[in-house]
Each structure stands twice: as C-alpha cells, then as structure tokens.
Length: 265
Ligand code: OOG
Ligand code: MG
Image 1 (cartoon, rainbow, N blue to C red):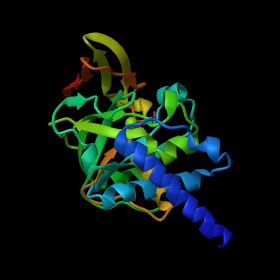
Image 2 (tube, helix red, strand yellow):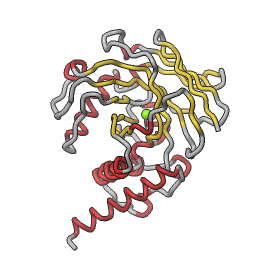
Image 3 (cartoon, protein in one colour):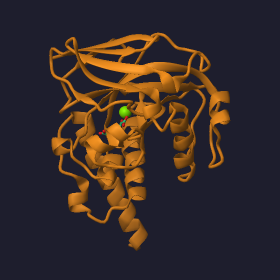
Image 4 (cartoon, rainbow, N blue to C red):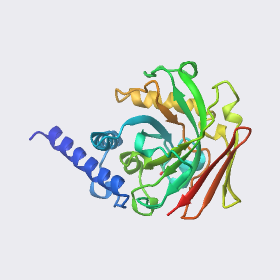
C-alpha cells in the first residue's frame, strides 16, 4: 500500500473511533496522544468523515458553526485559533430542555445564528455577500460537550471532535439582518437566577457577520461551501458554563428576549 492510502485508512479509522464516542456520549483520550504529528488538515478530514458516518445512519447536515471566535473562548480552552464544525439535524433541540443522558460534561454558551437563503462560497467572499445571502438572524444557545477527558484538547483534537458540537437551541423569534446592530447586542447568562457570564456581540471577531465570512474562506480552502437553508452558528460571545441536572439556564439578549434551557435527567 502506498503511504497516502495508509494515511487515508488511518483517518477513516480515527473518524469511526470519534463517531463511536460522539454517538454514545463516552469520553476518550486525546487522539494526538496516539498521533502526535496529526496535522490540522487531517483533523478537518477526520471531522468530515465522522459526520459522514452519522449521515450514513440517517442524520442530515443542516448547518455549520464557527468556534473559538472570541478571546473569552480562546483563553478558556487554551486554543488561540478559530475553528469550524458541522451541525446535524439530530443536534437541534426542539424544546428548551436538555437531557443529561448521553452527555459527558456539557457546557452552554450564547451565540448569534444566521440562516442563509443563498449559497456562499469562495476565498473572496465579503461582508456584503454574507448580508445579501442572509435570510434572518436568530439568538441561540449552543451545548458543547467535548468527548475528551477533562474537556482538554489541542487544536487538532478539538477539530477532529467536530469542535465539541453536541446540541443547539434556536430562539423562536427570527429577526431581519437589518433589525439591529448585532455587534452591540448585550448578552447576560444566568444559572439558577445568578448572573454567571456577560458579553457583547462585538466579542465575536468585532461583529458576528465576520465569523460567517471567515467560515466561508476556511471552507473554500477545502473545496467546501455554505448552502442556502443552512443555519450558521457564529461562535460563543462569552465563556461557556458547565451545566448540571436541575439547572435552569436563562440567557437575556438585550432587546431580543430571553432564551431558557432546563437541564433534566
Ligand atoms: C470548542 C467549541 C467552541 C465556540 O462557540 O467557541 C465553540 C470548545 O470550546 O470545546 O463552539
Ligand atoms: Mg459554540
């Protein structure tokens, strides 16, 4: 077998290993322990292959997300680079409740999500292109749950584990992209009535729209693009908080209402 083929078989094997832990909600060692020279490009390929496994079981790719787009997030996990991940239909919470079953050590973070009405592709994409392709903007929560022990990873590990993607909740109310200045939106996150995190939209690359631009550029380097209808999470505005059974999480998006999440058994 040629070297390239050996490498490909390995990436597929690692993808299946990660898919198993994602599916079962069980923790695992960092893959960079076994493969210390794994390149970030390989990690993105592992991510793609692992989501292919889920799609082969009947799941569906319905969006993409950016991660580590704010300094607060980069500092909290010790990875100082924006990353992307894939969102599938089975990750969407249809009710504002989170079941702890099948989760390891979930965290919740506030985000601003874009829904697209046109495809977006290419290295030369602009902010104007993104606005022209945006159907609406929606306040949202993401539930991340790294499959790695102690929620600890390198850049390559977290990329391969689909940027810790697990569940997401979109607010009921969608807004016109022109409704407000998204970089000025203040966000406060409460756990059981206590204020635990606060931030502002500008924490995400100065403006969340820039996160979508960056995502399109990163994808185009790998020959991929965003499709009309996709939901795009632009990255956490604040640090994520650990949540436990019985918690009531409330996130107040200034002028845009409150998103609640009840954490259950
Ligand atoms: C990586 C996922 C980051 C975000 O919004 O920054 C992310 C992690 O923190 O485990 O989704
Ligand atoms: Mg996130």
